[in-house]
Length: 323
Ligand SMILES: [Zn+2]
Image (cartoon, rainbow, N blue to C red):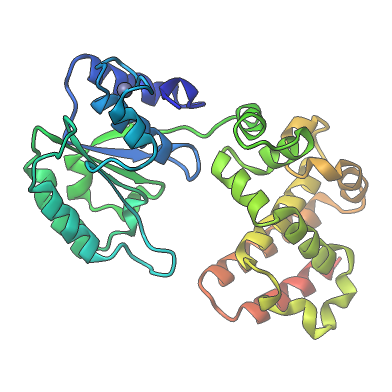
């Protein structure tokens, strides 16, 4: 990997390279953009380029520094992220990097601290970090990434150089899935349509067997609606990620509505079921599909706030069945 292998973020890369070229690297960056578009990957590439022994605009991929950063084994590279089971990045981790930031680099030109999904720091952690960001040192760089900038304190934002990331196009994701992740063409086409511009979303979708989850949802709430009166169908524990499965149902109804107006396959998400989409789309009025979409969206909101998900599913099933 090097900058040249990152897809769809040319503007961000140009900005970073111009700073490397002028030797004007800031002490702290905030990489802002949707989930799964390459913010973490680009942080690591940036860390490599900053510390590459060849001192070019991109990592050489041959020197010891590039090798150690690539394998995430460099003593001057720190990657901080939330642990799976906790709701925040632990304050101890932040204290640890504050201590590390007080020391000189062991061997790199600049010590690099990458905090991914920085909104996972609570206010206390962000304030603790702020003290470091306010007194940047020549030999260290902080890179914070976020997909939810509203979760970052304005004081922290104001200390960082913002770098914006784009959503990727369906074709860019499709190619990435084939070249880098070994997806076969059929999977790559389908998952890239489902990805909504985020290549991370596409790979997670495959890992979590998203198509099977989608089909389960469609069977329970679209194809066999009358079965809703059976207890098991409205069991919220039946789905490994209920919110995600409801999103799938939403995409389905969205496609049915789109099919009323458009035939271009490129604009659909469930591209593996186009025949059914056109056939079912014709059976419902635009009004009915609009109401169904609202109903699923409301249910997603209830589930998000964990307000009696079982009851929410039951009510949604009743509304979907209503003509
Ligand atoms: Zn190098």
